[in-house]
Length: 261
Image (cartoon, rainbow, N blue to C red; front, side, top):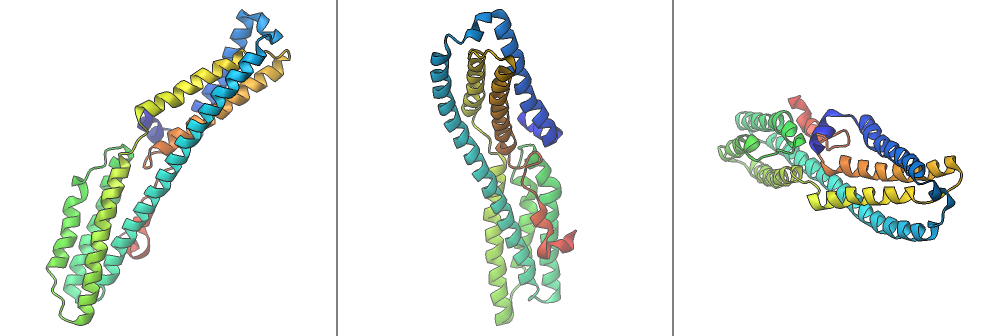
């Protein structure tokens, strides 16, 4: 459900769906609560409700802050992994320029096929949370094969050959991290805590008595809007390769890799 929402709705639509939904739920709930229990307007239980709301709000705020910061750090880390992998692959192309024409062409062609398989085949799968190692395994092995088939004849070729092999090993390590990150998701228990906490705090705002109806609805709506935006952040940050706010394959189309596009 989460991936479907991220892949089929733009962020603006998700704002309307999540934030707008919580706001409408809060307003409707508040109006219904005061209609069924008119005595709430007197605010006889405001002291108790205020203490409970403050305590629950503080705990819930800490949990939300922890989740959002962790997800943002995860997203930034994934962006770094993708950039590092693309840089390493790009470096292989640069190093291969020191090779004779035939091995240089073989290495460059193998790198081009790998880059296209990552962007055109593996990336859509990662957007669906189904990143796997098999999709690009053959292409990465082709790069290793092209390098193994070349035997450096000069010291310059030997130096650049060793650098190319080292860059390829780095790219493989980052590839593994990228695919692993594409499977990351918030544990179900944390989702239950995040959503359940909002469904506990929101009804508490209905019990807080305020005589002025507009001020009361503004209070309830503000809390609902804040909770809705927080849940929206959790939703869009949870999957690093899905949605508008996601990791882009653009690094695989830049620098020395631009020639393949």
